[in-house]
Image (cartoon, rainbow, N blue to C red; front, top):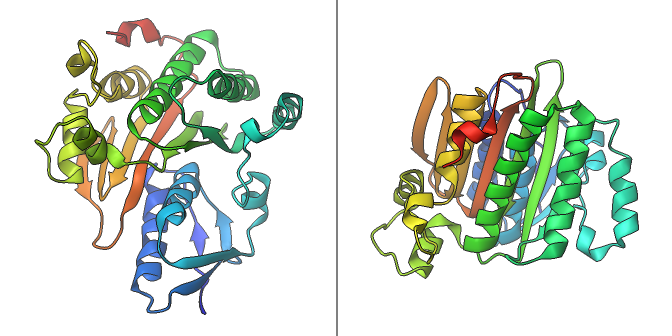
Length: 296
């Protein structure tokens, strides 16, 4: 069995830093001749939501047998080794667990049922949102925008992905005034969603991400073409309204946008995520922000 023990310390300057660290690891895993590999986190200092959730998505579909060992203390307290599954717990127990995080700067990795019409899913995610808002004393104007972008992103997962479960993980950086949230599924990717809807105009993952950013929907609903995957409105609110950063990763393609960058990129050869991952950097101290200015 091959052992990989990378040195990991994800800096918080950009959302993509977590992905860069993970891609380097995945390239090592994919290049290894062995099918059984130990991924040792002994040399890990800090990870980000993007790193953690993207790794879980990758591990869910890889054909290699990868054993994770020596989780760092931070990885353990955020439940990366064993994501919380609230629908498998008593509601009172999940509530009690979340209450324990009200004095923290993070919400642990939560795996939720990715079913379009699910009261249970809505209750779980509302509880997560409430804890985040309480942790950071987020004012109502920002809280409304926060709830919108989380809800819109998760609705897209449950409506498009054909995934049984999704992930959400949040980490705040109070000294810098922003919050990172990563939400993902292990479904059929954006390209797969278009194909499942009978839209065959796109042949690659990067074409599918570009289409979603042009507000072309895979939903078979009236006016869906104008709504797209909710990406446009989320980007407008997050970047133009709050000065944040947005990233979406699906299959072999990546899109990222912030106040000073707007890029579509192909992932390195051999690196692929069977699902869709959305990362949001949300500055939460803008007193002038009004989310209604960005709703179509």
